[in-house]
Image 1: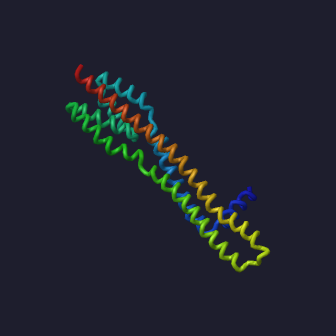
Image 2: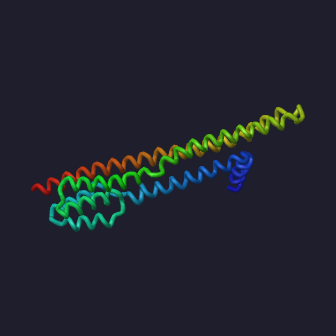
Image 3: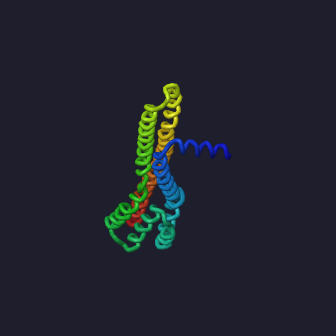
Length: 214
C-alpha cells in the first residue's frame, strides 16, 4: 500500500503545477456527483406505482385529506405534486385550476432534478484541456533545457521529459472519463425520474377528474 501511494505521489510531483488545477476540477466533480447521487437515490427515491395505488385507494374511500397528509410527509418532487393536486381537489376547485396548480409545482420542482449535472460535462472538458496545457508547458520547458544539455544526454533527457509531461494529459483524461461516466449515469437517472413524475401526474389527474364526475 505504501509503495502504491509513493508511486501516486511521484506521478503527481512529476506532472508539475498543472496537476493542481486538475485536482481542483476533480474535487468539484466529486462534490457534484455525490450531491446529485444523494438527491436521486435517497431524497427523490419513491415507488411511484405503490404511492399512487395508496393515494387513489384513499381518495376512492373518501379519505382525500388523509392521502394529502400522507404525501405532505414526503419531500420528493412527486409527493409535492400529488399533495398540491389533492389539496386543490379537496377545495372543490375546477379541473383546470387543479391542472394549473400541478403545472406550477412541476415548473418549480422539475428543474431541481437536472440542477448541476451539466457541470460534470464542463469538468470533463476542463480537466482534459488542463492536462493538455500542462503537457505543452512541460514539453516547452524540456526543450528549453535541452538547448544547454550535453549532446550525449539529450536523447535520454528528451525521453524522460516527454514521459513526465504526459503525466498531466494522463491525469486529465482519467478525471474526464470519471466525469463523463457520472454525467451519463446521473443524467439517465434524472430523465427517468422526470418521466416517472410526468406519467404519475397524468394518471393522478385523470383519476381525480374521473372521480369527480362519478
